[in-house]
Length: 120
Image (cartoon, rainbow, N blue to C red; front, side, top):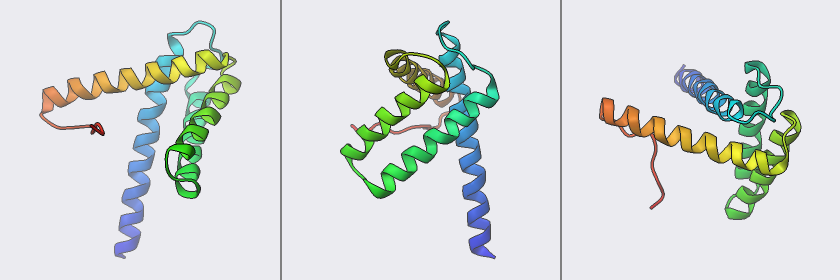
């Protein structure tokens, strides 16, 4: 029963991560008027595919090369799914990350918790 509980907890945490990623990606897409298909369902599918791409490349090709290839595929995915150019897809990703960092810092200051760790 312990493994099932751990699996359920992992699944709930994954769904929570997916919803949070979807919210920040939707906000970032909303800032760019050229982006299309900005409804929550389409952005959720994009977020789901992004997490699968990151997982697969981290599992089969760990390291910097896998991360770079995954990012390029993610940017192509965003540009295709939301009818933006490749450059806009990069900007959308950067804006979503910046919004996440700002929100994480504010929540961390309010509640006194750390929501992300920087590698330096």
